[in-house]
Length: 186
Image 1 (cartoon, rainbow, N blue to C red):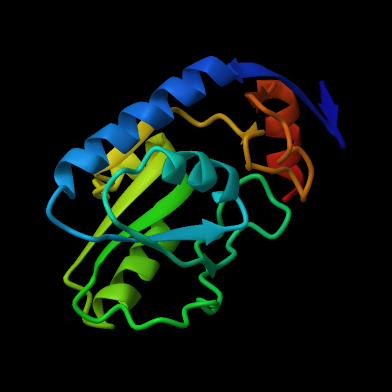
Image 2 (image 1 turned 180 degrees about the vertical axis):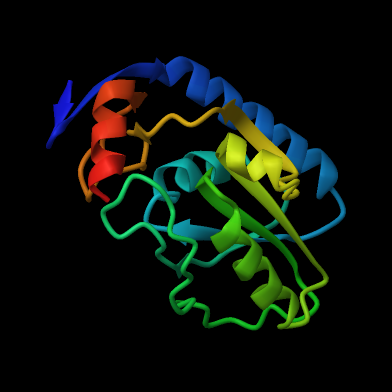
C-alpha cells in the first residue's frame, strides 16, 4: 500500500488490535475498581484507540480531550511540545489516565505528565497502544502498553503520515528502505 512517498505493509491486524484493547480495558477496570478515572486522550492520533478502549471500560469514568503536536509531518517525534490545549475541567485531586496512540521517544509524554502533575492530579498513568524502543530505553513508565515495537514507522488505526492513513482499520509499517529515505530528507 502506498501513502504519499512511502510504501507500507500490514503489521498488526484488526483482530489482534481489538483483542489487545479488551485486555488493556480489563486491566484498567481491575486497577480502578474503586476509583473514577479521567481519561485524557491525546489528539489527534489516539481518537480511534480511545473510542474503542472507552467502550470496554466498566468503572465510572470521565473523558476529556487534549491536543499536542510534536511530529509536524515528519516520521519521528521532534520532542517539541506545543501548548496543551483543550483542558477545560479541573484535574485537581483526580486520577488521570492519558490515552496515547504511540509513545515514540517519550519526550512529549514526559512533558505532558509533568504539566498534569503540576495541576495537582492525584495520579497520572498512561495507556498506549504502541510503545517504541527509544521510549523503553528512557525507562519512561507507561503502565498499560498494547504492543512493543522497534523503530517502525506505522500508520492506521488513528496513526497517520502527514494526515493520511488514520482511517485504516489495521496498523501498517513503512518498508525500511522507504522510511530511511524519508528520514534522510528531514
